[in-house]
Amino acid sequence: MNKNIEKPVTRGFLLVLLTIILACLVAGCPDRDGQTERIQPPPPGDRVRLHVDVVTVRRGDLFAPVRATGTVTPIRESRVGAKVAGRLQSMNFVEGNFVEKGRVLAEIERDEFELAGKNAEAQLAMGRAQLEEARLNLEHIAVEKQRIENLYERNVVSKQKYDELTSTHAMALARVKSLKAQIRSAEASLKLAERQLADTVIRAPFSGYVTKKMSNQGEVIAAGTPLYWIMDFDRVRAEVKVPETDLRRVTPGMPVSVEFDALPGDMFEGTVSEINTAIDPVSRNATVKIIIPNHKHRIWSGMFARATIKTDVTTDVILVPERALVTDGKGVPAVFVFVDGRARLKRVVPGIRAGGLAEIREGLTGGEQVLVSGNFGLNDGAEVTPQPVEY
Image 1 (tube, rainbow, N blue to C red):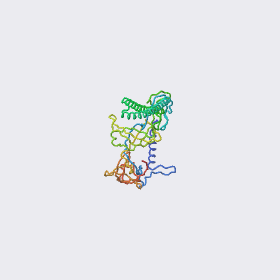
Image 2 (image 1 turned 180 degrees about the vertical axis):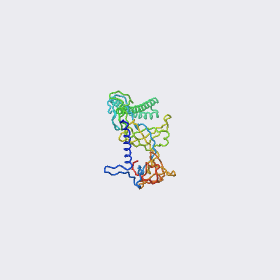
Image 3 (image 1 turned 135 degrees about the vertical axis):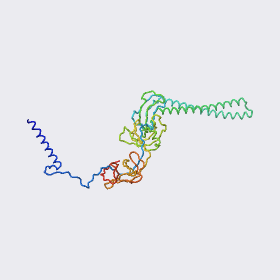
Image 4 (image 1 turned 180 degrees about the horizontal axis):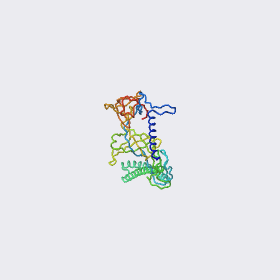
């Protein structure tokens, strides 16, 4: 009995409560001070402004980038070896050491070479003494030959005597010539001994780093045995692979910006030095060599290089971000310039576009603020709120 009476009462209460809530929403509920708070529409002159990004037009350089990757190699390197055979008396540097040009890298024991030099000197001295003796003998025989010739012409001496003296003179002359040849040989032997003695000291051919030590002190080595591998890092070469489709745009002398994964955040400037026009038939790439100054020796052989070759370079031109460009109702290129709180459409003549930037040849002079966001579909003269950004 009680359950049947309770349902109509509950439904009636809910209807009354819903009616009160709707009335409050329509008429406005009183606030804490007993006053009614009403929603006020915005004033008729207060329009909503579009927030846009703007940049200041500036002058600068523009280029079309050709990007390539490759590996660093040294421009100058040398596997320094021994010119003479012998036992290594000293090896003065280890891998990673910097050596200056002319520094002694290694030495070979000198005893045998010093002895060979002394023997050559002795042979030369003896030969010179013999030559002097032979010359004096030749002079004496020449005088006697002249005397006998005079007597023979007057039939004072026999032909046999004359022939004997002539033969003796010829032999003396031949002896002098032979000794002269022996002296030349002895002089050559002495020079060879002196050079071999000097070659026992191995010096750095240029300033650079020891990248590999290839022999050890105490070893008996043959002539030509490599001792050190030295690389000059004052300048390095990056050999990068350029796609065949971009190769025609690259020429020697072009500027290049190079980054290295091993040196994050650092940028190095270089120059295209060589272009190998033989294209790999598999990769369709060609090798381009880039010279990079490396005075602080931070770039090492084998590093991975990312190069941006700057082609079609134009300097000191008006630049805007490419996204600033729009077209007017007639399809003519234009930009929106921010002037006195409004976006004003201005026709321009664009030039080269590269790297997200566009050259403006006519229409802007520099210093203007142009829209780079919210500019598509915008009406000329629309009120906007600018937010300066960099580019």
